[in-house]
Image (cartoon, rainbow, N blue to C red; front, side, top):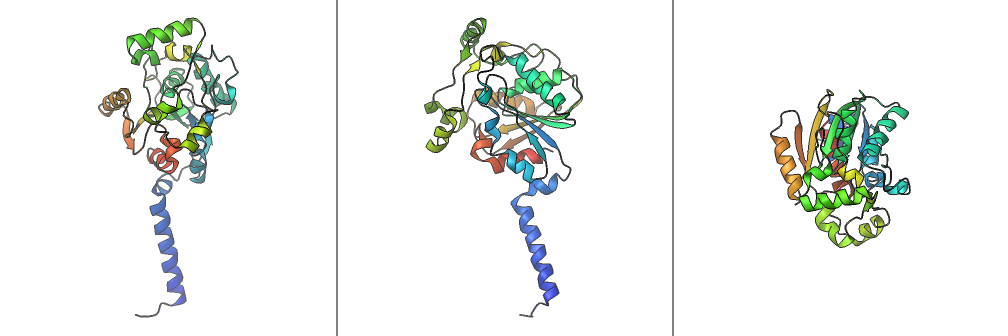
Length: 269
């Protein structure tokens, strides 16, 4: 075999390194323009739900904020029973304004699809791309309660009238619900999961989320067996106003497989 010159060897090594780097994280090279991601967590969770994903987005050259909604996470003592959807929408609208954020990628997981729709309905002009992650996609006049069976809706409305909270499902149900089965993760998440105001499930989106001209995407977690999210995803696939994509993971994929989730998020642009 012919011996490579020093210069040729260095070039070959550099080329191989670049190739391996591209294979390891193809989404990074596909998104060279820095973006700001505002990550909004789902029901009973908090900003902590993004703790494994946010560093990966930053490593890819982007900036990230992951605000916790009122009455949840570390903000659970803040008017827990009255922190409904309208308060949560204000949380994010105020976050965009206070931090002077523009052209953001607004990401909403699960329940936070209601928050994303509400923010779009406010027409802040600060959102460039809205991404619903395995989420509800309500229109004006709809709430989370619009998507559940009538008896469940009635329970939410009864609790909301009392300014009461909806307790989270017990850890034994987290495997089916969110994909969380690892004992260490359950132990870590247990003190962080908090009850949520029933009003957040019954209050409706006030403005028209389709009135603002933004990119819209839906990222489906394809290992989530929940039929509601399967139905929503199937409907979105037929809606040309949305870019549809899937990630190979359960509902809480941002915690379970953050690299796979971050790559899928970045590929959406």
